[in-house]
Amino acid sequence: MTELRNLKPSKFDRIFNGLAKRLTKLGIGLAGSQILAVRGRKSGEWRTTPVNPLTLHGERYLVAPRGHTQWVRNMRAAGGGELRLGRRVEPFTAVEVEDGVKPEILRLYLKKWAWEVGRFFDGVDAQSSDEKLLEIAPGFPVFRISARG
Image 1: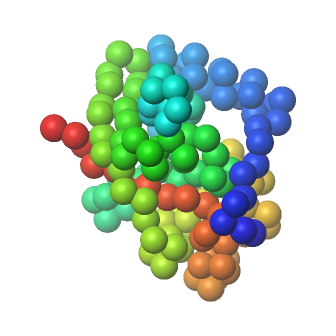
Image 2: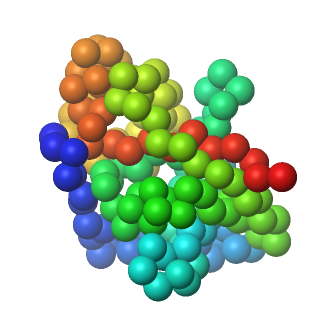
Image 3: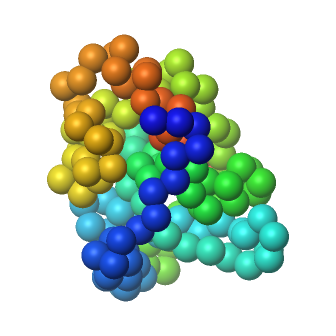
């Protein structure tokens, strides 16, 4: 897997994401999902996508299972965004995590959401070795998020 990894959503993904967005707007997060809103790096307009925020050792993270997608590029440019669930809006700042610290984060992410995103990991799962997780880390951007006050 390369650093340029960017898996486009399938028709099924677009349908599933649309359903997840509608439910989340109603305040119903599927297994903890929320809507990520981030300003477009070119347009400046809000762009949204469902995400699965992850908490590990008191820190919160967003993992990009499809790789270096548009929301990842926008997040890098904006340095933060909002997590939305129903009417609740949580502004946050984001810092990208270095590859060397990703294995533990990716392992927990796969434990929690392999049923939804495991197919994007090409056979790597929560039981994979730290070495294997480190090997794939460049293809899976991760952001540490902190509430903006």
